[in-house]
Structure formats: C-alpha cells, structure tokens
Image 1 (cartoon, rainbow, N blue to C red):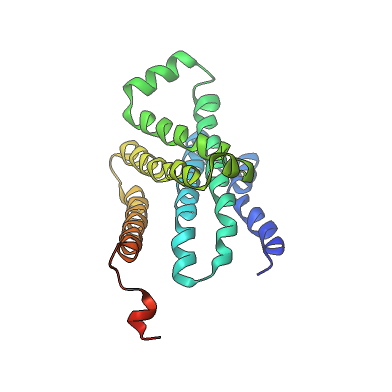
Image 2: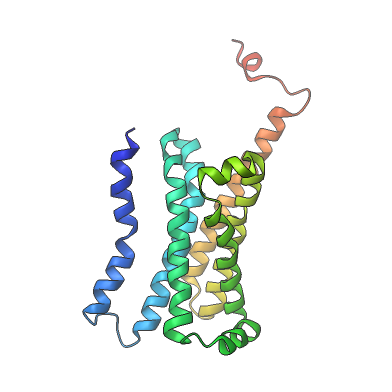
Length: 209
C-alpha cells in the first residue's frame, strides 16, 4: 500500500469539516447563532477524530490491513486541531479572552471543566507525536503516556452529556463507540496476557504443526 499517495487525500478529507464551516460562515449559512454552530461542529469533530484514532489499532488487527497504522498519528493530530478550534471558539468568540469569566466558568460549570480536562489531556499527546519523542521516551513509556487518549475521549463524552442535558442521543452514541473500543482493548489485553502466561500452550503445539 503506497501511503505517500493516499495520505494527501486523507489529509485533505480531514480538513473538509473546517473548510465547510468556513465556507458556510462566509456565506451566512450557520444559522441564527453562528458561534453555537461553530462550537458544536468543532466539538463533534474533535470527538469523532479521537474515536477514529482509537479505532485504528483494532481495525488494523481485525482486518489485518497493517498499513492503517500509518494514519493513526494524523488522525490524533486532527483531533487536537479540532479540539483547539473548539477551545478557541469559546475563548475568543464567546468570552473575548476574558480570563476572569473563563476561570469562573471552569469552577462553576461542570461541562466546561470536563471539556478543559479533555483538551488538557490531548496536549502531551500532541507534543509527543513525533518520532523523536518516541525515541526519547522509549516505546513503553510513550505507549503508557498515549493511553491518556482514552481519558481524553471519556472526558469529551462527559463534557457533551453535561452540555446537552436533554437530547442525549448523540453523546450517548459517542459513549457507546468509546465503550466498545475499551471492551475490545481489555479483551485483547486479556488474551495476550493469557498467551504469555507461564504454562500456556504454544499456538504451534495446539495446531499440531
């Protein structure tokens, strides 16, 4: 699989949501509350890219399409990109950089607290997404650090649930996908641990080869 030909296409596709929001904004098609439309749009795509990033490894193993792993870092960085746009919509367009009011919101409005937590957990992931960071941290420490993505996605789902309050269908759909990915990871880890346990029968002996 020639990733160098596919990656530019996928990259441009990942920019599609922000391009759509920009075009709609310049053509006055964001509805009566443009800030709310931008906030919801960037928030949705942050969660989607977090879940897509988490789905890469299971999909790679299930389908044995190992080339898919080459897109995981790109999807993770796009999750951070849309999360940053989501945050800046709040900081700039909603609060006009009023630090005092933002601190009051973080302390008093629990959905803001959860959202800030989700974004804060993405920062070390974005900063250590390079090959240099992987070499510097070492494979095991880097993997342990990047498990924060599960906590970030969970905080994002909670942020969404606490935000909408009434119609919970969409945040619960995201939560269900995250739960499925967590269950898969736990099962995969349990199977790997069982296979590596002392006294386990090697696969070749079981198959009779």
